[in-house]
Image (tube, rainbow, N blue to C red; front, side, top):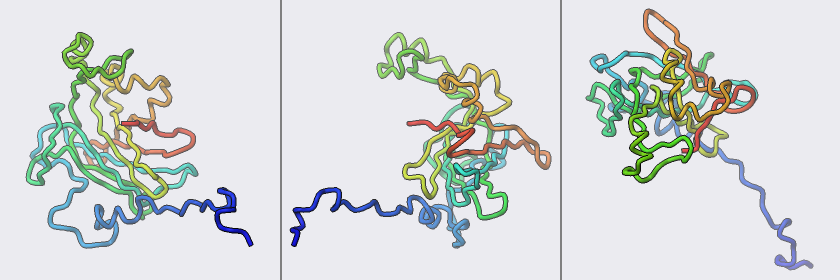
Length: 230
């Protein structure tokens, strides 16, 4: 009879347990109505800007598509963006006209779209980024000072959570009608391939007289969206 410790390590190793990752539990806590649960009185959700918020009011819509080309119907997205003047609002308060943070989710509907009601963000200043040397930690260095006047193109930061995504994905949404700003953005321009860069550009539409931008996120395969390691 073999003793347990006489077996090879490969025989004793257990296979990795199947992982549920982000879904559906994340919706139960963060996307109540998507999970079919009653909403709370105060909810962090997809309306980031109230009617009185300064700036150009827009809607952003899109889908999440997996490597097989199928819609991901249970993805949750978190958005983080500057206000119309290029300033982030770190303190969240539903009574404020605008909040920099919001959440949305794809749905079980036929189109399975996520959406955000917000304002077009302003350009955020870049401090201490050098194209050749990377991030400059010393804010007083001449390289940092030389680049402090640079501004990123208007964009929305997005984090994607979904079943099968073990670590949430980070990407950015830029705007089709900000071509000049996009061309000189020190972050967007670091993506060497123009084709890959286009995966971050939201297309402008008009729906019911309102400005809308469409941004479809492809998790894998041909046309895969660029993801960042922040």
